Length: 525
Ligand code: XMP
Image 1: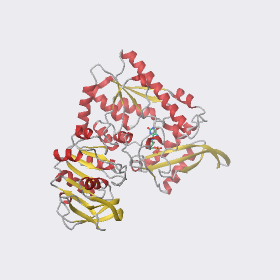
Image 2: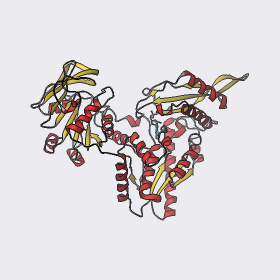
Image 3: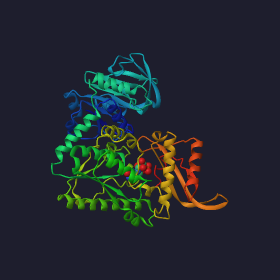
Image 4: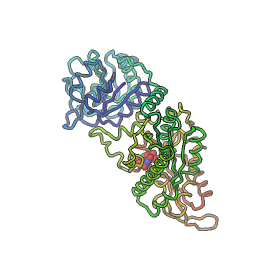
């Protein structure tokens, strides 16, 4: 295991992902975790991440007492990145100070001595790297040497092979450091001697084994399927472990996309052979949402209704099988787990409260279900890989994310007003199909249409019209936390706009959303 101690850098997830791409299992925990948490994980290598602090600031996060003694007495290799390097220098008796010149952005470094870190390059070789620091190491601790220097003369890489400490002042994990991956791989494979053998097949086998151990032979498990990739892969995995003692429910809440129910039920039943009950709760949801315009209220109502339906499903099931279901499957991913316990000062702590995501928590307290979260340690792309092994069709695995509250956050205002939902379904389908036909679907993180609760004047045939406006939104993103709007060619936009106005009754104007996140969010509500 390669353990990453997170000191709040925005790139920490990236380090974890890059290392896993090398077929080496890595985990990331808060940099201020207790020594017991670290020793329990029994890592072979520990990476100290970057972070926004100065090692001199009062609230500077640091590893726990006894950390240095622990790593040295157990032969653990340590690599400090940026702030991590400065921590090593400071804690082992060197000096970190405010640099004469700060280094932000692309920078050239030169390798000064033979080192396992730069096996392929060698002395005198130069490479471009991504720097982001104000402080720098001005005096190294006893026994350490400078391996590389920046073009401005500051320390870029250090090592003390005898004590197994290494440090990079730059960020090898970002793509702006083109040779960063080679350096990480040199460090892990050559210096630390790790054998890259972590495979998704092994993850699957291990998860199945664990589920079979914790779920007793007569226990039953329930799962709510959203039609998204995560819950589908999680359910398919659990189904492989315990068969039809898994009971899934799919709720038609009236807020689904065009033919969504037919499409996902076909996948669940025919392709994946999952035992699924489809509950028609359209009237219930839309009845509760009638007249509600506040986005947060809409989300809360949907969350609450969903729980009621789920509760009823569990009660009915209990009557049928004569036993309370004991477990609940959730498709929680690794980023959700990391986000929910951010390190101090990382600035990530409010990311989830910007909008209340209804699928995070909120289940009835008296349900007393234990959770099965088989994807809890995986990133989205790894879940897709796992899905492939589980024979989930590739087209489905590449589907754009769809929010839990569905079209309710895409019809602004009252969702039950007129035939807004129906219009939106048709517009959305035309937009998405056009994107697929143009071969752009996989280059876009998420695309959808939004129904605006306003009318504008138009002219269709010889008649003046007073009809609806729809907006098109397409974004690129890594993880949905930040996003850029997607720049379509004018011809594509022109074609889509014509198709929409010609075939969807009630729409006479199409606009495009050209805002990134931030300042906007991806969804409109
Ligand atoms: P925002 O709009 O916050 O969305 O920029 C970021 C990503 O999250 C999705 N999203 C949700 N997913 N329940 C979900 O399951 C929600 O309440 C929810 N709100 C937004 C959104 O589609 C985008 O992918």
